Length: 68
Image (cartoon, rainbow, N blue to C red; front, side, top):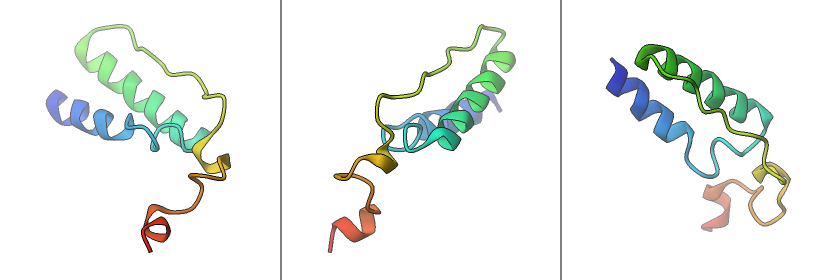
């Protein structure tokens, strides 16, 4: 079960995912808290980035639209 949680945390922690907006950052930090509790360690939370991906004009368009 812990390995599954760590795998999901890795996906959520990918660049463009955790830093897309404040909701996704909160999702990552919540998942980090659950993993830390399960592993018996202190959580390592991420801070807000200087610029959210959704607010960056170069990356705010969905990937599916950028590849057309």
